[in-house]
Length: 287
Image (cartoon, rainbow, N blue to C red):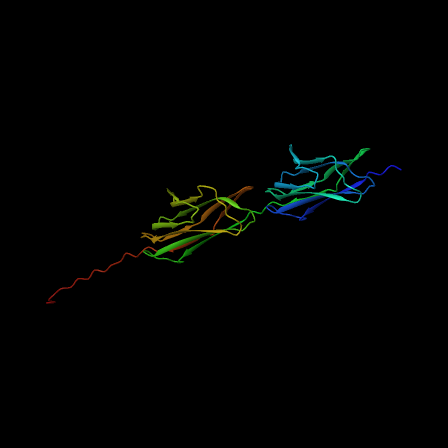
């Protein structure tokens, strides 16, 4: 009887559910399950464009794979070799390693390996099992809180606003702008800002003075990171009872979109000083 050419192709993926930025490894094991020595082999695998920084390893007898771009599918890795001696019962292993790139929507990453193996007499093709994972996009989130201190300042007293911004999502914030319009009641205003920001752009607007910060270059605000801005000044004189209130507005830009939020409002009331006086006249001597 003629010897039988037969083999299996098994593909595995680790970890089973990697997230954005995490490593992923594919392992392809070809086992000669027939009764004849395999002499030549071609192994082809197309990797999703979501997988970045790909590196490979291959068994002896194979050179590095030929890599070609496949429109809409990814990159195809093809190993080929002849003059092999893969005996019955033995295996050869190929690996493809990379990391999961950014996705902005849930994305299925799946693939299978195609193998053609042959002998001097015949050749046959096999496909591996399919491996897949649904990659979830990172979440975008932000908290913005404004605090006024003291709660009820009077004329001539200092008041400070503190704006705290925290990246509460799992996506990195790449640009940030903060805008706050301060009541004209506040005079002698000064600001402080994080090192990634320059001084605010100050403009006079209806209802007060606007302070606007924005990043002038690349900003990488990692998940969990926070920035603090302060605006301080002195409560100036008023001629009528006046309420000084304001709310800061924040825009965070991410690779997959933007988050826009307003802080809580802060306010205090400044009563007008009372104009009053007495007039007293005296005479001396009385008579």
